[in-house]
Length: 165
Image 1 (cartoon, helix red, strand yellow):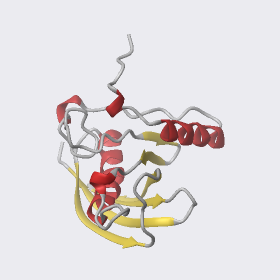
Image 2: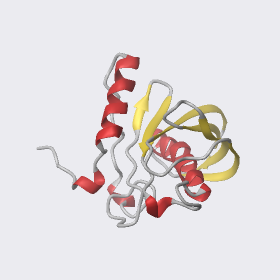
Image 3: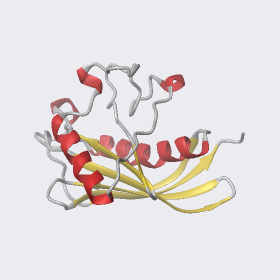
């Protein structure tokens, strides 16, 4: 039996439409990465966190994809998403991908971030992450956030360390 999430935890209609477009582009359904019940209070993806971002992650052939629609409570200057929360999205798209892929937490050791364009409140952005290289427990990831018009809003390169098993 499939669990139906409360509306606040589901993708909104725009996010669903964008996911369908991505699936058409790839020619296949993009599987959602399962939520980890152990980390239900995670600010970015936890379902139990009442003020969290409630992200859903979808596996790409070579990475991960998420969508996010910032609300007024996510702004800094009027109508613009707070840069710290943009950073959270990038950090999470890279770290959560590794956690799901490897089965152990991945801690950000370094993140180099570049903001390129503002994110408007109420617009749905595309968040994508890819593994670039690894050496032992260190993994380099790249993440990018794209505005609806295709402009890059922010991009990051991050070095993460996988927790010892």
